[in-house]
Image 1 (cartoon, helix red, strand yellow):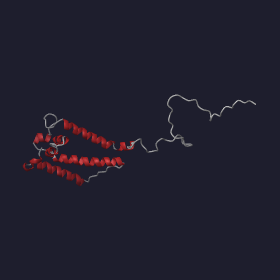
Image 2 (cartoon, helix red, strand yellow):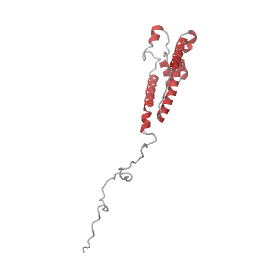
Image 3 (cartoon, helix red, strand yellow):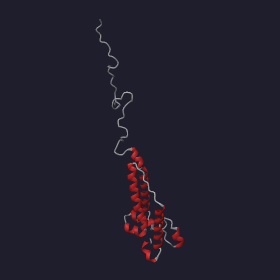
Image 4 (cartoon, rainbow, N blue to C red):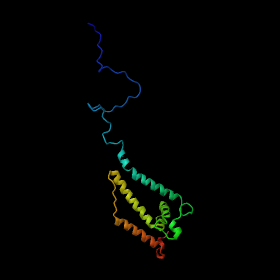
Length: 181
């Protein structure tokens, strides 16, 4: 009989050490399913998942555009002539439209002067506040994965039009000169 040791079966043979970092393979595979994922399905790498980032991308992009517009109007003063075009209605008729003073209002608002913003165009400041509320609601609902549904009825549009018409008429009358820009 030969006393030489028998070679070990291939499953028990020690693999030669390889230099360098070893790959991380994760937990052992489940039979028939391949390697198990490191993170369970749906779990993101951090507190904000990629799907939530996609959902809030539109409201964030809209806010970025609004911030950029206010930054531009805050930087380029509309009170100095030549930076912005003159209102065509004001130029042709001398009548203040509901938007007249809106850029001066945005400039004052961007600089934190709410009184001057209201003095330039009060309806614009109300519009800024309405936008802020609607945008916040949109962002919260988008983050939760629910759509924002705002469906004004025709009576609401008529009411907005009536308020703008009254504002326009009053700001062009002598007793409403406080509303003129």
